[in-house]
Length: 140
Image (cartoon, rainbow, N blue to C red; front, side):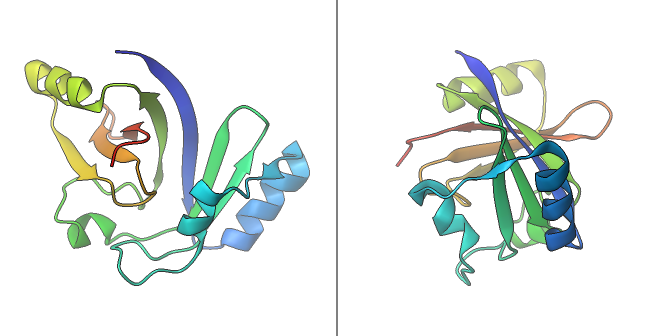
């Protein structure tokens, strides 16, 4: 099982201000591909309907999102990735990762493919309460 740091997510109550700050200070570009565009559109069929700006430094993605303290409740999960933000590792074996968590007694929330089509997402807390996402792309 391989892991690679994929993105950092910050949640905010003022998305335009946060996005402008990081774009100006760090000269981040905007990601405008089909995979990310579907999330940027408002959809009423999801638990999270906030707006998201996808930025990049050319290697790492940054997902700046409108805060939603109720996403976890709406998804009936105990981990809410949209309250304060999270960081993410991409893996090639999400089922193996969940088995590892089970073996280590680490609780996680299996969101399945809910935010970005084809991304199977799992969220968990580290020992200090930070939210971590691990996802595998191209799972349908």
